[in-house]
Length: 204
Image (cartoon, rainbow, N blue to C red; front, side):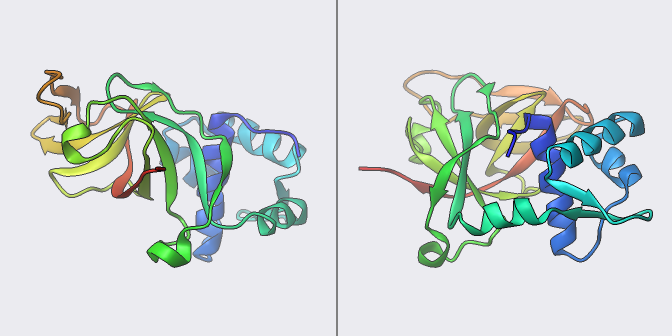
């Protein structure tokens, strides 16, 4: 199947998660979730249909996953490994699936958990090293002080997250290197909490 852009992958993942819940989303709901214009969502959904990831069964909430896409997913097992995430300065985290790690049964992970590969050393004091994989539970809510992944426009970074009045503090953990806490304004549509880190996997 034809590969997707990062934005198309995010739209597809959202539609797929809603379909798993038995709540097919409307295009208006997709637009609201991603803070996009409805015309932009219409174009993105049209691309997903053209690339044979989605079919439209008609009606207000008629989006469905195509059999071709479902057949391809059934051949892949385990937790998807997607892109890279920075521990240091943020880098582009393109959500292209690089492979699959068969860890669900071993770790008891939920099916929506995914892995991100860490690049950088700003979280070494938390035991997260350059080249590690962090297991991420998706969601836009996170407990204050929890390690999580934040998307800054098209860049992602893993940090300890503190939700403060009017801003979000992204705190590194490498005293020796002297990395500084980064602050971003709360409510900025370009800033989004991707999920919380629930584990770290290291290839020895």
